[in-house]
Image (cartoon, rainbow, N blue to C red):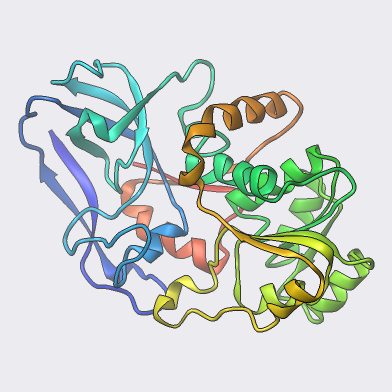
Length: 330
């Protein structure tokens, strides 16, 4: 069986470009004992992938001429493992390719039911829905009456985080790039206000929407935007560090906040997290997300067709070329 895969051929030093990758077709070897072969249905395009393409970091380092790290969902089409049978659906590190092959232990069996398979990379996905829940609810402790600001609000995690805050009774303000995204956040996602960070006077926009300050900031961006919100936090505010997409293209010179003393001055907290530390709570997170889905929680998808589209899709993640959950369908 042939596999079409995306491999790294040059380590990017700035924005990722198609030229940093090659797409190749390889013939898969016969299965070994304990292995399975999976036809990949969808590949998740996530910001953390960029951190694997350089010198290495929390999520490891991509090997040259090796399939690029990515999470996916798919169906088992051949099995030499007792744990998984042909026809089972799985999620896990399928990598950026059309067919994944490896030990059954690499994958987690999922029950699709009436849900589309892509849901397990979106609202029910570890890097998306569960991350948003862990950060907003478990770490940030969002509560009714909070004024919440979410950066990267039109991305997958941000979109879910905004809605979780709304379901918790908070006033929610999203920060995103461009009038199309801000209108989408207020009209489709239903938050209270949205700020275009590409427009003039971002601070003024924030002051107008949150005149009494910010109780909880869910940060996906970092950089100057983090400082701008730190300058407007209220007493005993919480700042949750989920990601820093503005910094991922130059991980060797990450810029930290200059106004971190606002945390001390206002008796506030700055809390960082990664979702993997909450693995024992995934089932509880999932249960609550499913309940809120019945009450309107949503995550629109943007699907790029063909595994050859993966390099450009990853570029879109960093230039603001998508809304909601960005996926590639091999």
